[in-house]
Image (cartoon, rainbow, N blue to C red; front, side, top):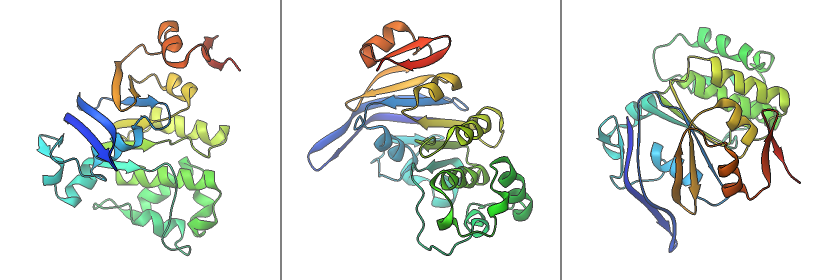
Length: 238
């Protein structure tokens, strides 16, 4: 179980999150929505320990700070919204080998994942030479191989064209490599199609956290007549 207790976060005299208390059941998937600057990525980084939470986050009954690094990597993983690499000459294969913390056979695991993401032909390519969309899928491959109990995806559809978005969608819906998924996204159609409960952040406060978010009443409240559902599709009223 992942739990927060009156979690707040302030930096440079600006409070980004206000007294958030949540309990996420084992295996419970959900999506975090909210406007830019509402605190979504900050919350995600606090949940996985990239930002110290000062004993406000518990993971399987332990304060996050008390869980050693190796154990934490097995329990929770954060997939960033943007690919970055310290060495431009690291190949795709070498990059993915860094994701294998446990005794899973490396070659078999990598060769299983890469075809699913249409990356097999790039195995010996420098990761820095991939397109931005291919790098985004490489981040996904890394997360699949790490196989953490909880995986947090920060804007996973960023830089993806429609075909690659469909690859991501199918992996999230069908792959058993992700036991529990937390997604941050601005892609409302993606969120609607996944059908997970929605956690909506407004100015650092949780204003909604349950199923049935995509109702006319909620769309009007949160998006002010800029969004509607037509024939089971999210439509922007531009």
